[in-house]
Image 1 (cartoon, rainbow, N blue to C red):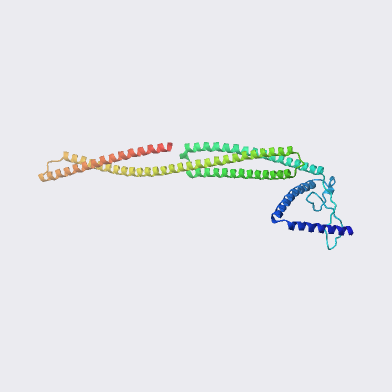
Image 2 (image 1 turned 45 degrees about the vertical axis):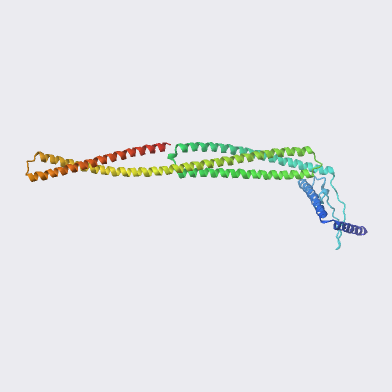
Length: 370
């Protein structure tokens, strides 16, 4: 009981001394002290987490250091206070118990185990990275094959443009672009995942380096070399991803060019169709007029023939009748000449329209062949 009272009084005196020292410090000194304590606590927390991971992986029956990992709260240096098992009084004091500390050899053994575990994780990450690299290579080869197919289809479309519908061509290219964008997004997400995993491993490695003073420097150099190799692979994947994006951009530009050319051809085709329809209407009207003129000419020829037959059998009429008939004949000759001129004009118009029609037909064939 006396020892217990002495311990309580000693702890109280120590706390008062610490409080007095803290009161004497300035704000800057206090901030610096707090910063130093936080750094130490961070290092000790990392060390404690490493010990806890090691403890959880070990079988409790085969542990030789079980006394160092009691289920009570660990101290910042890997210590475990021993419970007294007694009931405390209402006025409690901070009793100083003897603790069992880990030796340097034991800490080194645990750290070596953690290094081996990290190496295994790095090996697994390397295997995963190789798989991802193979997948990227396969995707890259597939992209190259698809690009060759696009070039081939582009050539076929330019060659056989008249056989395709504009909306179908545009829809086909848009579907392919959406598929490529989805592939690029998938590769970007996988690349981001790999970067996150690498950052996590780098953070763990940095933590081990901060508390790994008893470890060999060769191991950390090896880990740094492997990390540099992984970073180079990630940079290569980023380069491949950027190249795929550039290819997609070129494909989009090509699609826009084809769309523009297709629109121009559609406008030209519509214009030619309208002009052809106009010429067809004109030719139909000319044919109708020509048929009418031919019919009129036939009627006039029949009338002329009948008049000639009539004149051949004609006997000399009276003077007044002769004058009238002469006037009628003159009028009929004038009408015949008028109709002959109309027929000539109609034939000239028909020939001109027919010539224009053949010219437009040749132009249409030339445009379609292009």
